[in-house]
Length: 176
Image 1 (spheres, rainbow, N blue to C red):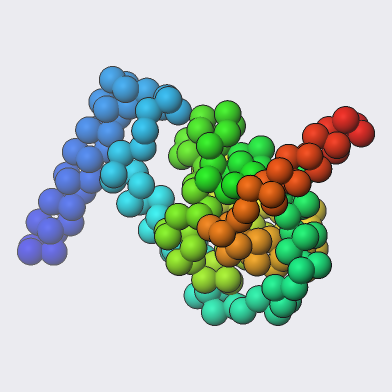
Image 2: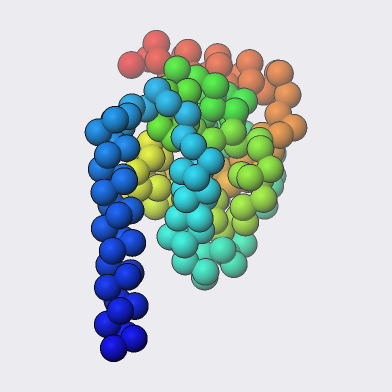
């Protein structure tokens, strides 16, 4: 009898929660203009952790942080990532600001504290229900690992590097 009462109570709480969610959505909608609530931010961070296999967290970048690898990744980032994340990695672009959730600041501790494997997994597989696409079908593992190296470099990126990225992106857009 106690099990039946417990189950009934759980079902009632779940139904009440769903009912509240339906009423809230009808009142507020799903606008991307609003800033995600703290609860949504908490859920998104934890969903990303749950969705990243533990084996991926343990992966180490097999490519050295050489000048050549950084230059290649800088160019790749400028061409493929900067439209959302910005040349400086802070996400302050028209697209990055208007995504929901907004494009993360790649220089922020929350990103920099991710393991190399987590960053690789995110770039390779994307993140559902965000604007982050999966690049594993487009980019080679070496390109993705070099992007991980570049993301680690972003907190110390120089104005000269940003200028080179902007010029490369402009040259690329004129070539198309």
